[in-house]
Image (cartoon, rainbow, N blue to C red; front, side, top):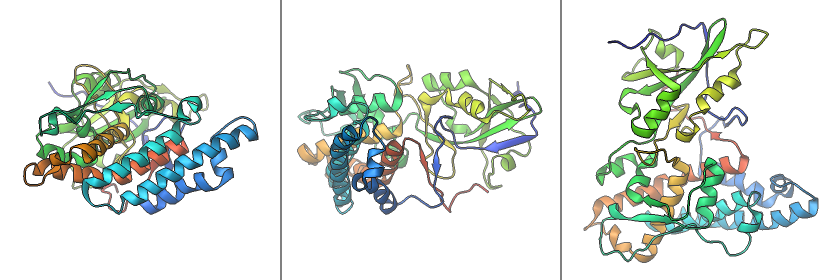
Length: 376
C-alpha cells in the first residue's frame, strides 16, 4: 500500500524551527570564534549590556552583574587559551570555560545556588580497570549540570541518573564519523528542512527528512504523534529550496492544521507551535543547509531528551577528567580510535559550544548563514 497523498496548498513559507515566542537571531555571515567571543565579551565589559539580563533595583542588578561579568571573563580567558592547545588536552580548558559560561547563564534563575562553592553536577571515577571508554558512565550529582539541563529543557534530571558515554557521544552531530569508528551505532541527530504551507482556509507544517533518518523508538513515537509520512509531490525540491542534485528524502506533514485568522491570513506562529510540540526531540540547526535538527532520545525505550548542547557539555566534562586522571586511554598506538575521537571532540565541538553559549546568553537561537549550502 502506497503512502497517502499530501494536502494540496497554494502558498508556503520556509522557516527554521523555533519557539514562536522566541524567534531566532539570523546572522548574515558564517559563525566564527572571533565573532562570537567578541559578542560575548560585551556582556562582561559593558554595564548596560550585562545588566539587562537582570531585573530589580539598580543596586541588585549591579550586585549580580559583578558575579556575572567575572564568570564571563574567566570563561572567555579559558576558551581563548584552549584554542591554542593541540588535541584533546584542550578539553580541560574548554570544560572550565563552559562551566563558567553555565554559571553566568544560571545566575539570574538560581542566584543563591550559583554564588559561592558550586559542584559540577556530574561525577566520573577514572579508577575503573578497563581501557575502553565504551563502558564509562557519568553520574548526575547536585550542581551545575542538572540545573543547566532543567533550565534548557524544562525537565528535572534526578540526582543519580546515569549517562553512558557510549550514548552521549553519538548525540553530538559534528563527531558522527569518529563515533562510528569506535563502533557506536544507533540513532543520531539529523537535520531536516521545514516549510509552513497553506491553502485558502488552513495551514500546517511540512518536514523533509532523509529516508534513512526516519526516527524509531521513543523518538519515532513522539514524531509520529504529530506528523505522518505522505508521498512526495512533484515540485518538492522547489518548495524546500533544494538542489536538483539531492534525492532520497521523505515527506511528513503535521496531523494538526491551524485555521486562518479572521482576516483570512495564515497564523504562522500557531503553525510553528504545532511543530514545536516536539520540542523534546528538536534542537537548533547545526548548519545553514537545515532548518532544524531532529535529536533522538538518549534511550530508545523511553523519552529522555538530550540535545546536542548538553551532550557536548557533558562529554567535555568527561574528556577533561580523562585528560587529568587517565590520559593513557588516548594512547595513539594502543587506542587510535579513541585518540582520534577525542581529538575531534576538542576540535569540532569548540565553535558549536560557543554558539550554544551565545544562544543561551541572548535567550534565542543563533543561526548563521553559510555560503556552501545546497539550498537554492
